[in-house]
Amino acid sequence: MTALLVALIAAASATALIATAVTSADQRHRTQAGEIAEQDQQRLRGFSAEQLNSLDQNRVVTLDGTAYQVNSTATLLNSSGTTSCGASGAGAAAYFQIVSTVNWNANLVPGSGADREPPVVAESDITPPAGGILLAQVEDQTEAGLPGVTVAASGPDYSSGVTDSNGCTELAALDAGSYTVTFTDPGYVDPNGDPSPLTSSATVTATGTSRPTSNPVTMGLAGTINANFTATGSAGNLTGQEANALSWFGNGTSSRMSDYDTNTPSSTPATLIPATGSVELFPFLFTGPSYTGNYQVWAGPCQQMEPPAGIDKITVSPGSSQTASVQEPALDVVVDDLGARIAPAKVSLSFQSTSGTTCDSTWYPPIVSNAASNANGSLASPGQPFATTATTGSTASASGYTGTYQVCADASILGITRKLTVSNITNANFTTPTVVTINLTTSAQLGSC
Image (cartoon, rainbow, N blue to C red):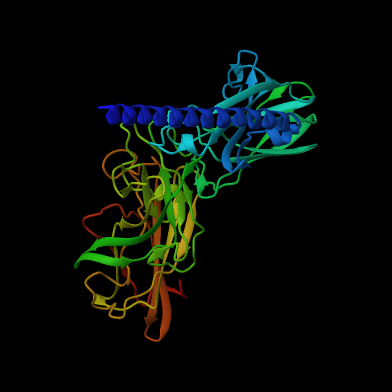
């Protein structure tokens, strides 16, 4: 019994000693962490306004064999103690709030026995140096703040910062004057598909708080596309069709492109556009949330070539990448000489807009090798851009605008090159080809298309 009591007393004493040692170590760590936090506060007070702009810095300080993790932040706040970034009514920036947060190894390791100990935090306020303040905000496609965007102001002075978790940054102590403001985040685009860096402007006053003319700026992680083309010809479904350009228009619930866009038309039609690289598109969002069907794409460089609503819709989500299959209506060009089918030397297609912003385009589609007998007509690629004169109904362009083709074919008739042009041709049927018959005879106009 005596031996048992001695053992119990010894165990209790050891436990007490261990607990005392752990407590002593925790107290020492916390005291040292407090000293490091205060030293960091002193360090931050010596920073310039440019160094404090959007500051979020991590570093390690080792003391007596213990590594202390120090996080230093600075935020411009208004007189109410809230962020000044965002709407113009948020209030002018009044001071920098600097915060030093210190952790050490033990209280960062779950289950260590000290992981419930909070970090040591020290904070204080600094009045911004004299000069103007520029506040900027960046949002993504969901209208949430976009962190990590580098914002730079260049003019009479220069300063830069990085947006925080709210998508905000504040540049202080700027000289008064006009500034160019850039927003940089690689891989991001604005709603019109313009890639980073995006540019705005601002006028900074000597003592006031200014915002860029575009505020907030909207940027989304681009989805990329290429396109190939299909059609339904007289002989059935056709792949490997061609176009001389690709156009697109995107929208979501609360935003849309300011206008349609197109890549630079080529004089030579291609089966894949762009043949190298890709088109970067903003990921428009519908309520739901959903990205489904947020773009309509089409062959050709003109807005009038946009097909009816619901045709050639694609989905572009943040960071997506795809080769879209774009359907074209088929145009079967048949060349005839006194009732006998012949092969033309050349065919030219000239699109002419008849409403909306003027957009005319001419190209020479390749001729198929068996043009005199091919079931799909003379063109190697009967699939051609949409054209309609309808302003309402199922064959009207989603743009509401109209246009027609002039189709010219030439061939050697009795050793003499002759041509004939037919006008006011539409190409609006996606299920049944439009057949254009050109009767070349000895009375046709001399020359080539």
